[in-house]
Amino acid sequence: MAVEVNFDTDVLKKRVSETAEGAAMQTLEGMLKDIDPYVPYDTGELSDSAIIDESSLSIVWGAEYADYVYDMPKTNNFNTSVHANATSHWVDEAMNSYREKWVEDFKDNFRKRWGE
Image (cartoon, rainbow, N blue to C red):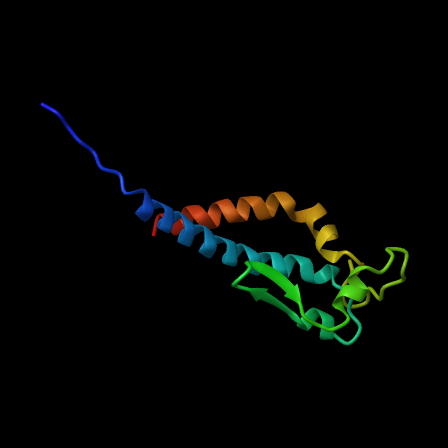
């Protein structure tokens, strides 16, 4: 007796892709909260300009001067009265502290969504 098993990889690829995208969006929301204390804060415009771009699965700071501030030397004296860790290259600095957490968050988010 022969047993034949058909495996529809297209269905699996679609489910993996949708699950990963949802997990990434959920992880990005947490990342944004973790990164915010590193964003220089004067009027709050730069911090408030952050959005999660669903099409690229990324966080974007939309203030027109965001690139300028991001590339400032680390020796610049940023005001730390509101955001205690304020610095240039804020994503890199936050990543130094949170990289492992973000990886684990993504894994957890993926597992939870996969089980839905």
